[in-house]
Amino acid sequence: MTELTAAAKRTAQAWIDEHLQQLTEWHTHIWELAEPAWREYRSQQWYVERLRAEGFTVEDGSAGMPTAFSARWSNGDGPTLLTYAEYDAVPGNSQAAATTEAPRDGLSRFAPGHTDPHSVLGISTLAGVLATQHAMRQHDIAGTLHYTGEPAEKMHGSKVVHGLRGYYDDADAIVSFHPFYMLPLCNTARWDTQCGAYYSKVYSFICDHPEQWQLSSADPNSPIPASHSAARAPGANLSLMQMYSASRSMLDAMLPATGGWSFSDAILTDGQATADNLPQRVARVQFSWRTPDIEMAEHILQVLDRNAAAAASMGHCELEERWIARSRPGRTNHAMATVLFDNLSEVGAPSYGPEAVAVAQEVQRSLGLEPSERPFLAETEQLITPQEAERGLREHMPAWQRNWTSDDYVEMSHYAPLVRFYVSRPALQPVPGAGPYPSWVMNALGGIPETIAPTIVTAGKTVAGTFLDLLTKPEVLAEARREFAERTAADPVPPLLPADFEPPIDLPWPDYRTDLSGSHEHRHW
Image (cartoon, rainbow, N blue to C red; front, side, top):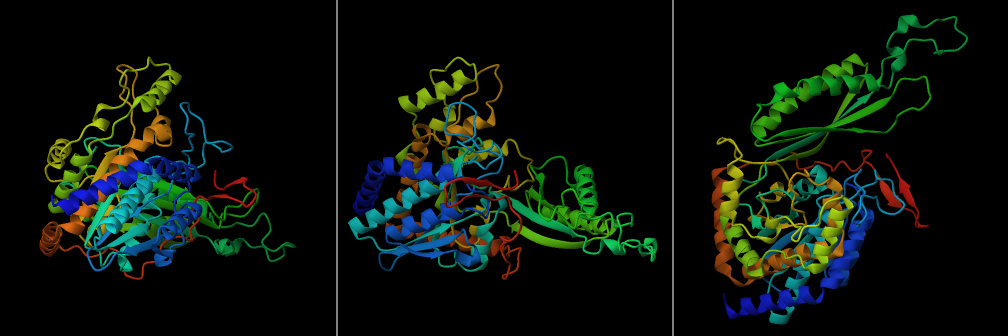
């Protein structure tokens, strides 16, 4: 390590240590907002205002997405390095930052909450970016920092759009972070096995002319045209139910019983009549599927499209189809994984001190468990090399399977050398014989300052150290770019959506806002 690089890293790490209280307060703010996909208005606005205050030039609502942003800061000619924030929460997962199960104050338990949590994903990368900026100023290091706001990650929402619009085209390297929740990917970087394909599509059944279903039933002498006794089309709900039941019934035959894939659904609610005698005019169902490769994803798509056409016909409906996401499997870069893990090793795994332990023990007491001396999952405080994590991951996968689970960072990996890394979020060691902890426990620990601060420290310092290596060691960046070019030439994978793809921000996604009086408004729960 050159003296310049070493000194710059010390400066960046000191900045994070000195600003940890502030960073933790920022995290609490985003965690409490907990806005769902495509509706993260206040979270996005906080980032825009914060970045402008830090000297960044910010495009508010980038690529036509109101809750996205693109921020840049430059210190002269040099590499352009990119990382990003996410901040969407999940409907139906409201949890207070407390040691007992309870929604946040004044909210239904069906309000959104941070589960992964994306709140710490964003604040950790922001910490890394601001620490890097400070070190670049102090040590006169040239280069550009590009920081994007990526809404709707739970729907693979914004990254494909930013990519298609050219926002990643000038990036020399990209660092992608996520807080851990799946072993063995804890305090490490991905090596060969990246995330796979993800498809998501909404099928809308529109019944605009129910009265034409059975014209012969119309009584020309009826004093009330289209009277209550007239026969009408089955309507949109019938089509939706046919689509849903047929697709669920066919699920076992869609894909092999091995290979790590999943299939999920959601029913979107708008245009639904209440206490009326008319058939439903519109019904929408969203299907999302994760597969190891594109071929498997395409097979499911063909089945669903056929089912949708048949269901629409049965209900006397028109069919509208809308893509939500269509993501390619990720592209590996060993050079990036190596330089990042070197920095993670230098920083060290998160460490949970006495205050965090006390919080965890109180959670155990609230569940009727005897408090553990060391309550946190052992792996959360340990590093694992990318190669060893890869070996552990492959033990549970068929030999033919190239990719595992899904996340939309994969789209970014097709534009520049990228490393995907994980730092542990607070998780408790299961007590023998007691079974797994309920999901609210991990959600709550993700919002309590004493337990989430170690994630911010470790991830933020790792981002900053990796960026400073890439800015001050041209040979490291050159090797990453050489490997990226070689892998791209050997296996080109073009985008799966057209260049003019429009983000589906207008669909009736669950909404959650605070009005000007400060009271909460709930929609769809």
